[in-house]
Amino acid sequence: MNGFLGTYSVSLDEKGRLNVPAKFKGLLEQGSPQLVMCVMSGFLIVFPQSEWATNEEKLYNLNAFDKSDRDRLREFYARATECEMKSGKILIPASQREAAGLNKEVMIVGMSKTFELWAPDRLEKASE
Image (tube, rainbow, N blue to C red; front, side, top):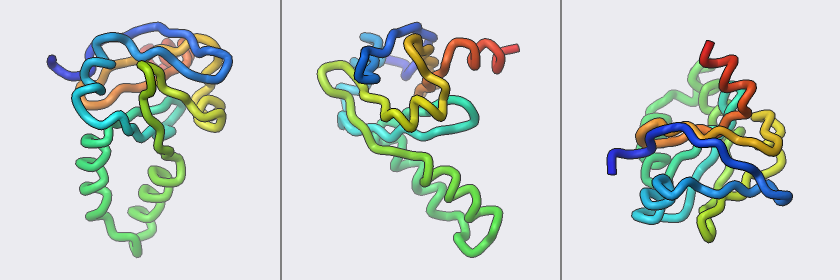
């Protein structure tokens, strides 16, 4: 497979879980079921554990004593949470859903090594 590709519309269940599209599920099952979900500017980005580790190495090189770097580190780590795929579903914590404006319908956007979770109206606005 070529990574996470395409855009999918899925529904959240009453507990805030979404069904992972079959193509994405296959990729996630090849590695650890552990994921890291991070709030970005109006959406969530989901990192498989291996990709999170690669990006964390890049963050590790930032200088925690430099205000700009420290702000970037805080923004990234403070808004991240660990989760996992269970039975083909991912539970999105309430705080993450609220920050991304996710209600019933969620757009899953493949970004090769990661994927994003968007509220349909926010994705449409970002795509203009």
